[in-house]
Amino acid sequence: DRVVRARFDGQRFRVPSRVYSAPAIVYPGLDAKLSDLRGVLVRLGYRASRDAKSV
Image (cartoon, rainbow, N blue to C red):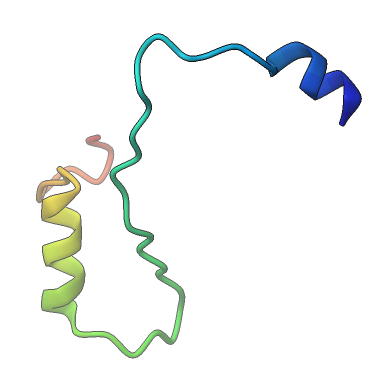
C-alpha cells in the first residue's frame, strides 16, 4: 500500500477516465433467447460472417 500511495498520491490524470461497459456473461446452458444474444453482439460491433475465420 505504501509503495502504491507513494507512486500515485497527488497525481491527477490529465484526461478524465470513463468506462462505458456492461458485462455480458455467456456460458453453456444459459437460459437466454438467441435474439437477445444477437442484439448484444450487434451493439458490441460484431457482424455476421459466412467465413468462420473472419474477425
